[in-house]
Each structure stands twice: as C-alpha cells, then as structure tokens.
Amino acid sequence: MELPEIETHLLNAIDSFSGQLLREQLDDMRELACAGEPGVAFENLCTQVFEYDLRVSPAIASLLEQLGVAMGISRDYWERLDKET
Image (cartoon, rainbow, N blue to C red; front, side):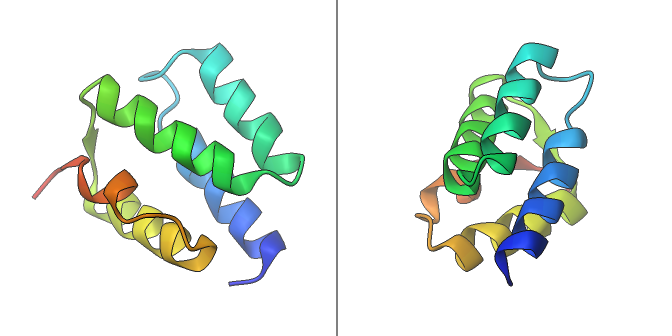
C-alpha cells in the first residue's frame, strides 16, 4: 500500500467512527493523517476505539489490520479491539 492509499483508507476508517468518538478526537486524527503522520493517527484511533470499548465491524477490522501491517505497526493495536462477528 502506497502512502496516498494509506492516507485515504485511514481517513475512511476514522470517518467510520463518526458519532461514536468525539468530533475533536476524530479531527485530530484526520489532521495527523493528512500531515504525514498516519502511524500516529492509526495508533490514536485504535487506542480510542479500545478505551471507549467500541465494537468494530468485520470490514473495518480487516481494514485496520491491512493498514497496520502496511505501516509496520504492532499488531497489539488492532488485535485487542472488540470485533463484531
């Protein structure tokens, strides 16, 4: 996955949590993703989803895994999330 593709998919993942996470948090993540810090945005997203105990759809869980692998981020970030079955 190339950086522009990572950014696009990450923004889609962030947007999927609109209404579940605070708008300010989502805006901060979007800003990081667009400022060349997609890894930080990804880690923040996964951390907030975990801390708020949100359920993650299979499609978003798969997307998060693909993004994490593409960026070389520790699997701990997305594997600990509560996934819908």
